[in-house]
Image (cartoon, helix red, strand yellow):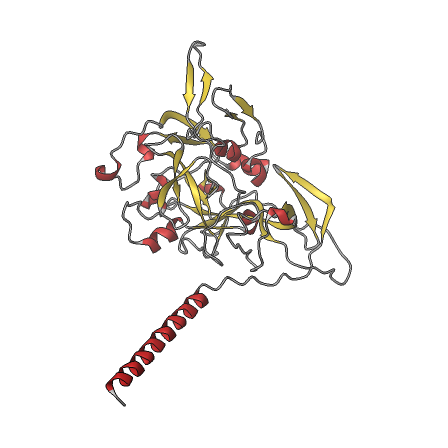
Amino acid sequence: MTGKYLFKSCLTICLFTIAFFITACASSNTTSRKEFKFAQEEEDFVPKGPLSFNITYEFHSIPTFCKEKSFSKPKGKYVYFGDFPQTKKKAGILINEEIYINRGRYTYYAGSDGNWYAKCLENAFEPERYKYAYSDGTRVKGRDENNYRYFKVEPIKWRVLNDISADGQTKAVLLAEKILIENMVWYDYDDIDRFIETEDERKFEQIYPNNYKHSKVRAYLNGLAYLVTKKKGQPVELNQEFENSGFLQTAFDQYAQDLILISEITNDEESSKPAEYTEKYFNKTNYYLIDEVLYDKLFLLSQREASSAEFGFAPHKVFDKDSKNRFFSRGKNASDFALANYVYAGDSPGNRNECGWYLRTPIYRDKDYVFDASDIGSVGHQGVDSEYESILPALAIPVDVIKGER
C-alpha cells in the first residue's frame, strides 16, 4: 500500500471514530435528559360492600408533638396543629357532596374513608413547561383541562424553631413544614404606590408595594381587609376578600385560634439584617422599613429570623458554598393541594417539588421587592407580584399547651 492510500485509510478511520464518539455522546445526553415518566392514573372504582360516610376524622385543635422525621431538619421537634387540604384522594374513596362543612375559605365534603376532602379545579403552574407530579407520581393537570380533584384534609405539621427546653422559655415559635397555600402574591400591583389620608386631611401617607402592614399576604394569613390601588392616580379601595376567612380561620377552629399568641411583628432595621450581618455587604440604608409594631397571630419570618442559628437556619452568606446545609435548613416541599393551585416548585422534570417562600422584609433598593428564601434554600429577593414564590406561615403558642412527649 502506498503512502498516499495509507494516509487516506487512516484519515477515514479517524473521521469514522470521531463521528461515532459524537453520536454516542449525543445519545448519552438524550438519555440523561429523558423526560420524567408519570405514574399511570389509577382508575376510580366503587368498593364492594355497604358504603358509610360516617366521619371519624378529628380536627387538631390541640397542639401535639409528633415524632415523624422531617425532610428539612430530621432531628428537630415537630408539632401537629390545625388542619388543611394536602394529599390527593386515593382511588376507591367515594365523596358525598351532600355531607359537608364550611371552614374558612373552603368547603369540605365527606369521604367514604371517614375523612374530609376539599374539591379543587386542577391548575398546574405553566403545565406545558413544568411537569409537576403529585405524591403518587401522577401528573398535575392544567386549568384548561377542566379536571376536578379532591384533596384529603390532614393535620398541619409545624417545625419548632426555638429551643423550648431552655430555662424560662414559655413560647414555642412554629413554622409550617410544607408549602400548603395556593399561589398568592405578596401584593397585587407592583410600581403603584397607595396614598391614604392621615389625621391631617391636607397630608397623605405614601404606602409602597413592599409595605408588609398593607400587604395582601398579611391580610390572607390573618383574615383581614387590605388597601388596593389598581392604577396610578386612582383612589384606594378596601379589598375584603379575606376578611374573617383567611388562613387563620381556615386552618384553625375557634378553640385553636384562641391558643395562638398575638406576636409583635416588626419590620425595622434590626429585623431586616441577616443574623450574621457584615458591614461589607449589608451596610445599606433601607428606605422601605417601618418602625410601627404590628400585632398578629400569623406572620411571615423576617430576614434575620430566616438566617438565625437560634431558629435552626444556616447562615445567609453572600457567597455560601455549603448549599446542602443551606437547602436542608430552609428548603420546603409543596403539598399535592398546593401544586394543584398554581404553586411554582422548581423547574426540573420529576423534582421533589421544592418551593421558594416570601419573607416579610423589604429590600433596601427597590420598593417593588422583598426578601425571600429561594427553592434552593438561599436568601434572595423577589418582586411583590411574583408568581414564583409561596407563602409559609409562622405562629407562636404557649409551650405548656402542647401535648405528648417531646
